[in-house]
Amino acid sequence: MFIVAVIETAEKMLPAGLRPIGGRTLRMLAAVLTERGERAAAQRMALTAFSIRILSAALAFVSQIVLARLMGEYEYGIFVFVWVLVVVFGDLSCLGFHTAIVRFLPQYRAAGAFEEIRGLTGTARIFALLSGTAVLAAGMLGLHFFGDMIQVYYLVPIFIGLLAMPMIALGDILEGTSRANHWPVMALSPVYIVRPILIILFMLIAIAVGAEHTAVTAMQAALVATFVTALGQYAATLYRLRRHYDDGPRKVDFLAWFSVAFPIFLIEGVSFLLTNSDVVVVGIFLEPHDVAIYFAASKTMALVHFINFSVKAASGPRFSSIIAEGDHAQLAAAAIDAARWTFWPALGVGLVVLAAGHLLLSLFGGAFTSGYLVMAILLAGILAKSLVGPAETLLMMAGKQNLCVALYAGALTANVGLNLALIPHYGIEGTAIATASAMAVEAILLHVAVRRTLDIVLFAFASPSAATPEMRVR
Image (cartoon, rainbow, N blue to C red; front, top):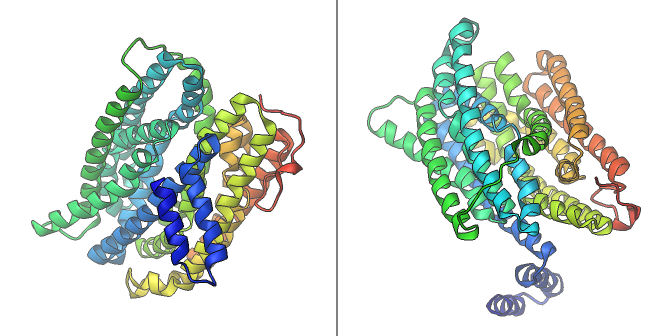
């Protein structure tokens, strides 16, 4: 009732000209905040995730500006290249278990299978620590035997970054656990709010006590921040799990979970590589100066990416629950609703960010404004991808993991091939063209796959009635 009263008061305070549109918007917001049911819960989670991502995008943007100003273009380029590699391989080391939790836990909860929930969440945490440690060991062996093939200024930062692998993997599992339980604040705030703040804080402390303004110092700050964030998130998540699911026996079905998690790993692994391959390729073929400019431009345009991430975070559990019920019409409506929630905010935010592009880039330093064209090109790709919303999440929740692997492999191949062809001639602008083109290819492939396998025309401008009544989810 308090929320409704606040919304009604706000509606009365609107100017007369804005009252019709503003009133409808406020009433929709009140409905999302007060209604019960799976759809309302998913929308509240999306709204919460969206708010957190707005804050986290702002924090990430500010933190990157601070780091660029502290280190300068060259050292900043080294740091961002290595940190992207660390995050990519840390996330991949989960082997898909963080998303498998989102698929299985809502189904177990609906069936009252609490033994399976306790077994799933506990096994996933242990697996993440072991697999993250395995990646750490493999990375150290790689540095030992192939270190002479790596640019010398990358060696020490990579060594430091490898030490963070187990904690990054654990953090992903904990995020998936919270997402599956509809705890968006606990899912997203540690990695996207707490960790960036701690990286800057520890960097400033290190410089205050005499450390150099280098990528090595920044990686040390990132390492400590990762450990503090992951361990704090572990304690908080474990406490909340014990409040919702009493202690008791655990049932472990590792092979069944892994048979789903591994294809998801292939899907999300290829997808994650597709998302970050541009920075990696620029780091391999160009100088740290170019890496810094490209990353600043892509990070600025990433202010739009959080919309897709927010909708995706909320849609996974909802899709899983609807599929378990076997309601095809509701699934089609939920999927198209998610696409609309992705595209229109992305369009509005993207145009605003592009209009302020020169100003935003200048905050990193005068040389960074040369990345404005990169921003414009990347926006075109982001909007193309947003037209189909979280299509990959829909396919994964419907058991179409293997198909997703093939689709993303094709998109990644196109991305890498275009990068190799365009970078020598067009530099970072060539990378942006390759990345945007790969996003468009990805969107087309996902649209076709959803239509042929689920009988859903997934498009931001489509109607749920476009889906056939036959339910093909298996």
